[in-house]
Length: 319
Image (cartoon, rainbow, N blue to C red; front, top):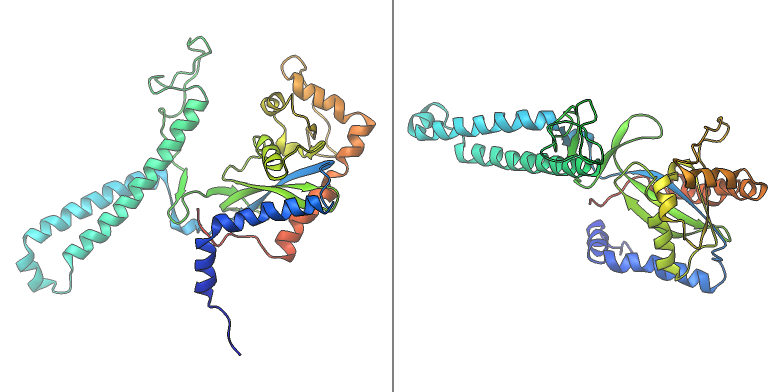
């Protein structure tokens, strides 16, 4: 009686065997394939936000980091100066632990500096992806390097003042919650097979957008099962001309919505967005419409079960 493992035992076991536990998912999916529960005829993909094991109150904006750095450096300098007069200080403030106070501030300063550097590194990568360079003098340029008017608001690699970084889970990002508001979280993506509504691939991203995840999910399906799905359904969040171009030779037939259901479709410039125009034409055919109508019940039900029935809405691990 009362013979059950402690929480710490389960937690340590999970932390020690993360790779092995991840491999179990692939083994189960392959076993389901052998049993005929996975057909890879039609696979639907979707994304859903999961809360990170991080608090918004344990984060700091870039603007506040810059100010806090200066404040902490000044406090450390002040404490070092006071340490020079330690004998007199001990008479007046016998309970003040100057070395301890300095150490506490130095640790805080180190954490803030590291978080600030991470924000700056991500901003440099984002700016470089937009075609900016460290010597662009805030002037936008065309493909030939000629100025094209206007100015960037910030220097290369300088984040917005409101950009935030978490001190508890540095991999998580601020994301909008479905019920309103924002929180630190991840964007989880699943690929679900139509036959028995089994999840055949699952990926995690700290990017709130879905638009670049379709190739990743298709690659995960093939890695897990050794072959491609015949047909893949995705909502408008996965729409991307660049991704359509990347997957133009994919053996899977892609059916990706180009807008929200019930909303008036936008005109598509076929010359500028040829792959998107081709997708639009496919969606207007009866087979395309019939196929896309299946997306909701294939993929959204398993995601709803995971979050609402199993209660998995937040990670307990970090990173």
